[in-house]
Image (cartoon, rainbow, N blue to C red; front, side, top):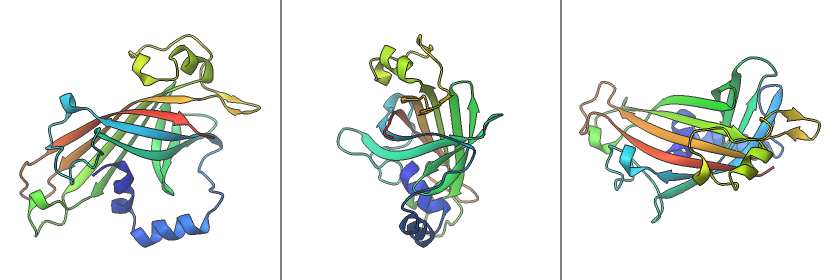
Length: 199
């Protein structure tokens, strides 16, 4: 289970499909469109406590990767913003170059038994955004990001759109039991993520 599938847990599948079918030119919340990114999430075994070989805990390819697309948008002032995936807008918080977005949704799983209806996933995305010049300093790869901010202009709106090119950080799925008896009771699947702006 991961971010791309959590959209369908949080909203009825038909509603998501209808929204996508009716919107060829999507409108994003907030007063500033930051950018749309193609993300690659790579399993982080050192920080994963779930059995990642089970599809309900991780759906990745043979290289331990899954891919998704998401769009950041925000208000002109303050920390309020959004992260939109497959037409679903989830709240996000912008602080300097950092963006966080957390969503909790009901997600029944087989390891909680067939009668369980209210086990949950709490998913947290945490990334640092980099401007075009900062991304160049990182060779446009998160492999060079050690937690420090490289030299260059900071991400900001310009007359040609928002100056942002790369997003580096983590994605964590925390599996919670709700009122169910689950085995394991709770665990987490962690990923390292890299997002490259596509628009």
